[in-house]
Image: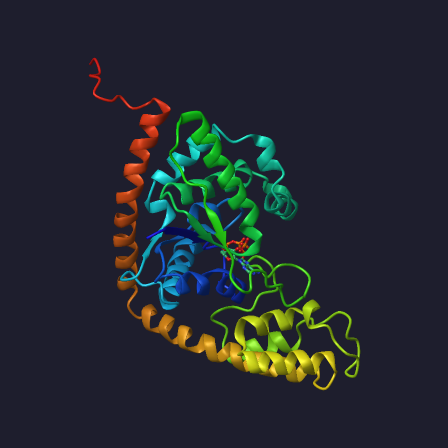
Length: 332
Ligand code: AQP
């Protein structure tokens, strides 16, 4: 079975962009691949964060993954910092990665703009650690949202450079995109993001979902109720693609183009479908919150299983780069 790796940062409340762009897709791939999913806490410390909140965020994120169906019977779920081989391999990858490649990453430029007071080395190095996350498991596939495609391309380049310098070791992983790889925020402008005030939370109750959708931006070309709209330019329609069944999708698409339905009706249908899909997940999260020891156990055994693979790959890497004392005795 081919292997998949993907990760999510415990950097805030998980939102429906994370869900339809990544997590739901991860669950759909469980039967076809050997899957390894990770809460990437070391990535989340590249921007300012509240230390007291971090542990709760890690547990909340892991709980959501398990509630979305990523159970230990079907995949490995663990926390990045519990497997130190990730950061060890990242150091080695640093030594084959040109700085210029990192400086041109769109996410780095955006984050550097957002966090001018804290443009640290980790922010620049983020994609190298991400490449190590993927390649320490020799994963062939990486299911992510569209915003991460550039990083996976760099991961492939890092694999190529390492292989060219030290011999064939790593695969060049391919991206797997979901059917909704880019959800914009409720502002209809920027990508929906944990760190922006534009997200619909995966744990939002129906009343909050409706309130956020009711006031969310729609097709920018449809100024009045009787103007025909352009669903392909409307973030609400993109969310319909993610949450609505084909017949309803057709109804809102035609209704929008012909102005036979208004944006409010379109949003009501979406709000209902979204809540219907999220409520069972929210109920499972509530159940897991009552037994946090179960989630901790899943993460502990997940880290053990992940480490079993990561240790072997690091041994191979140390040998290939010439630092391993293969059979040589050290003088005391
Ligand atoms: N708006 C989105 N639409 C589709 N997919 C998305 N993803 C994130 N936002 C959207 C995908 O979710 C996975 C986990 O993302 P992440 O937590 O590792 O980091 P991110 O992409 O930086 O997510 P955020 O929400 O924007 O977090 P912050 O604000 O902390 O930077 C990834 O596969 C991502 O593509």
